[in-house]
Amino acid sequence: MEEHENEIYVGIDIHRDYGVACVQDPKGEIIDEFRFGNDIKGINEVKEKLGQNKNKGHIAIESTGNMWLVLWDKLEESQLDLHLVHPLKTKAIASNKIKHDKLDAKILAKLLRGDMLVCSYVPPRDVRDKREIVHLRASLVGMRTQLINKIRSILHKYCIKYKGSLYQTAGMNFLSSLELRPVDVSAIKSYLETLKTLNAQIESVNTQIAGGDSEEIKLLMSIPGIDYYSAALIHSEIGDISRFPSHNKLASWAGLVPSMHQSGTSFYNGRITKEGSKRLRWILIQCAHTSIRANPKLNEFYGKIAKRRGENKAVVAVARKLVKIIYAVLSSRNPSFYGNPEKTENKIKRMKKIAKK
Image 1 (cartoon, helix red, strand yellow):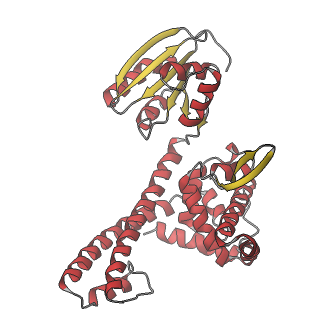
Image 2 (tube, one colour; image 1 turned 60 degrees about the vertical axis):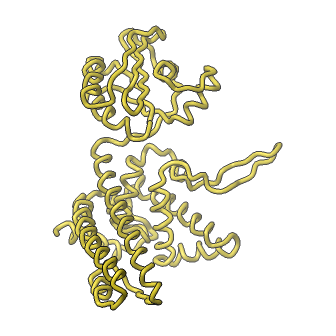
Image 3 (cartoon, rainbow, N blue to C red; image 1 turned 180 degrees about the horizontal axis):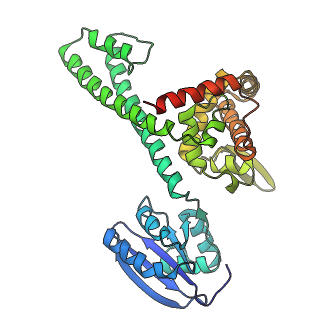
């Protein structure tokens, strides 16, 4: 960062109930240091105090849980230069460079001045809003899956098997018709009522997601194994593809690259790092399973690796290949050559149909 006379460098350390801000000039002199309540009133005071430094204020905020979100939204309105600090990686730099392993407000401001921060990507607000909707769907579907597992647990006591989807109409009718012990009838009745509510909520969220009509989502749907829900989640997690210089960087951010271990002068590959976006990694693994069934080329690729290294590693390899395809599709803005144009068009038609509900 270039030093300018009127610029300020602010480190903000956020706790559950309060935050501490340290304001420094380009030479590292402390101009101001203040504490504020971690509530709407306190955050508005911070905005008022720092917002007057439009285009001249550089602010570093430590990403503690989700407590930084409201403050970030407020300061973003003032067009300040915001940086969300990756705590673990920045602590390592602080410990090495300035012999300090605690990221308080003063240290954050100092590292910000020296351009020594490791920062996390924060997408624009509209992308964050889309991400919240997609995350909501994932949470609701997860709740429904847990409920279905509870129901199947009851059915197992009676050696009853049902191959269809228990949350769909036929499955729910099947459950209602069962003659079980009164205690289990009561439990299933309660679960069915909750299932109906969850189904309605998921359908409502589906309509919101399908109504997005994003060009990126349509491009992602050209890839085998990726439907519009998966495409929406992938796009919301990745954001702007241009922030990744290569598909390898994207794979690394998804935590799908092997970890490296050194012994003497030798290096060894270990398990995948599982760093970065957990949701992106999860959905890529799910899509890998689907794409193996949907595309002969990916199925062949999976088969070759499965013979040598086992099924689990083969699925991860397919997920990494999907990352490469995703990167190419979003960077070139051309549909995937792995895809089938007719199948892609059918996916888009289904998406539009749901959006009209």
